[in-house]
Length: 202
Image 1 (cartoon, rainbow, N blue to C red):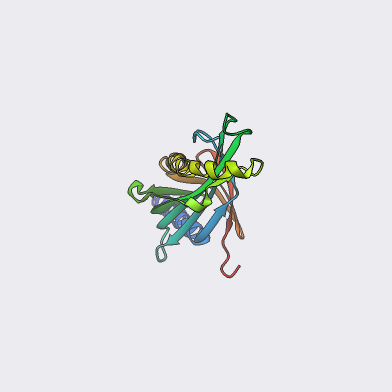
Image 2: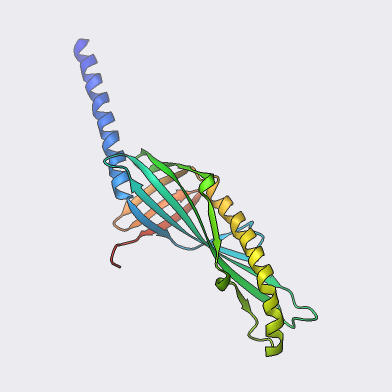
């Protein structure tokens, strides 16, 4: 009976060691910066919105945890219907960046737990990235339509802020992580996503 107890303790110890090794392996493999393929966003209030995610993991020394910075590159498109001043619908496109920081912990060999700090959320929309598509309108209309730019910028900030909150504020884990060289597949918020590692010097 005593031998069985010793064997059970040894097996438990081996399992725990194996678990630690697998966690450390994932923490080592995920180190660095990863960029996702583009995805469509819904519920932003825009006619169309898209997102590219960037995740940067910085592992603590020899640990299965570290800091993480999540960035969302968001583009929104809005349409103004034709009216007395606009002979065809006008498309307004704007791009912005949302970023948030926090910590990650490797839960097991294919899952991370995230603790993102909402107070670190920052939103930046480049005024120069607000594009008014009025090529098919006569030149005289162009100058008057440029007056729409400040309002379009405000609307874009609201929509990008809303999109960022939807993307980040319920993000507390990354599941089903599979890394093959410089490609990573995973599940975030019930979405299957693919990321590519940023390779230094390329």
